[in-house]
Length: 485
Image (cartoon, rainbow, N blue to C red; front, side, top):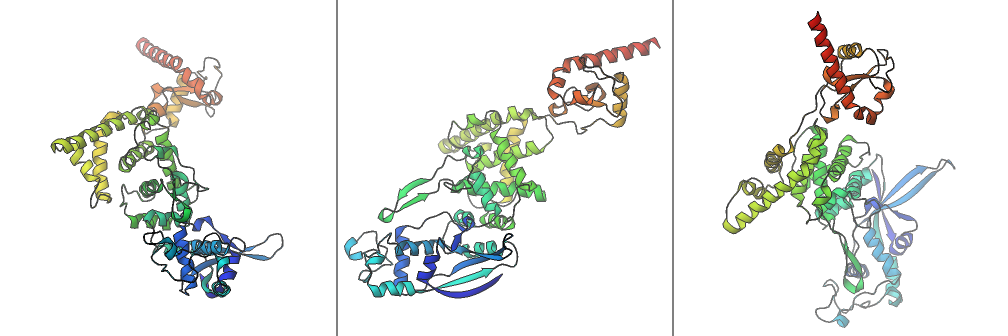
């Protein structure tokens, strides 16, 4: 990264805002300054105080048409400050007047009474104060990166020290993982926000408009906690995919590191695909919408439920578990509620309290060890109710089995509507009871069909009784032949 410090007059830098300077949505924290914050900044400038640096990323690209290089200036850090300056120069707000507001008013304590600019908009300032403000030198750093994502990494480091909540900082960080979290978990009015139906399970939060100082509008983000929850869930699933670990610490430091590791996250990334698959799999479960008619489940409960579905989806099981898992989950919820009530009223400690509820809060509850302990009990209670049926680990008929079935079935397609001769290379062995439904890869569950008939899955399913009768007839004929011999 090459960087060059410069001093630019305030008037010139403000004039370039929204014209020569471009604002990259990656470098936005998603919050808007209140009028009081803007007033405090302008007052500081009029008093000659130094304010933090502005960082500008100069990005050069080749213009394929002209054959020349073009430079685009991106504002990496300082947008809120520069927006406040531009708004004041455009007379969009006055500075506070402590004397007029009186004791207890909304004037920030940082703005003492008696300043000659108190209560004035820019065009109401004395000419000398206007000139002084416009000529105020601002310190900027111009950057040119030598490697991809250097500007992104710098922005993360810059924001690490600002007084924002942990999730506000993450939402402001550039990079593909930031967009991934915002897109799937949702963020009000963000252009990339397309929250998955899964998150209705754990949150119904929406942004609420509130009124702050001097009539300025600001928003409380009702989905910030949901994004934090999703970041932890995504981290767990991605670590499972990439490293084979079952659980990881969900502390802020670990989540921050994941954001930095995934500045670049292609849509086809296997770990990211697995995360999205889990979100979609939960929302597609029979009975999922029944879970939405009650109050949202806790984030911890939603976390364990999502990881259960992840394991079931990744495992080799007959998908009949999908019809039972929501009911089993609701029964677990009921047992947890009963245990909580029993402890509240009689101090009785049922297993669901000691081994699950008591592990949800307090020091260490976000460590891998405690999460693993909770999940073990969760699985212990739910697993027997799922009646899991493993798929046959052998997916395909081998060459010998194919030949035996080909000869047994007289080298003809066993579709009664076809019955055409089938050469051995063209032969397809269809599972009468489909493998995905728990059918075994064995001679008594295989039937010879041609390639065209094999591709018509619906027709093959409808012919299962016919195929099964054929197998019984073939067995009977073989038994009779052996007896005659």
